[in-house]
Image (tube, rainbow, N blue to C red):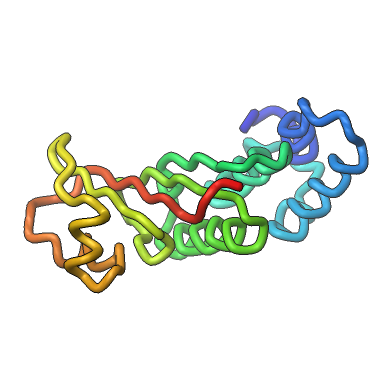
Length: 164
């Protein structure tokens, strides 16, 4: 996200590689439908948005080129717990409704309920594989983390959905 540009200008940058103007217009409609607060703030400088709104703008900008896979790194960084939930709910919505595959890397507050696969890294080592863990915990990635008997989780990578 470029702080000195407006919300609209940031979204335009996300669609830079798209040559079909109708597709760009449809991407703007989808961004403003998925993230209504961005529509309200379309002429506002991105740097003056709240942390959660900046995360929404970053996700919306990434979706402007209609990707098959969305990579999200530390979506909760600097956000309140409530805003973190909102951002993760929106990421889940993008996965379900737009069919975009999502890879999330999250250290602080992982949302394993969104994951179809989870890898738990502890002290720079893979401590739980999705096949071993999810078979042991009735196929739920959330059980992998909540029942993990090892120390503090230092990183979690989640794979949500599949790329088309």
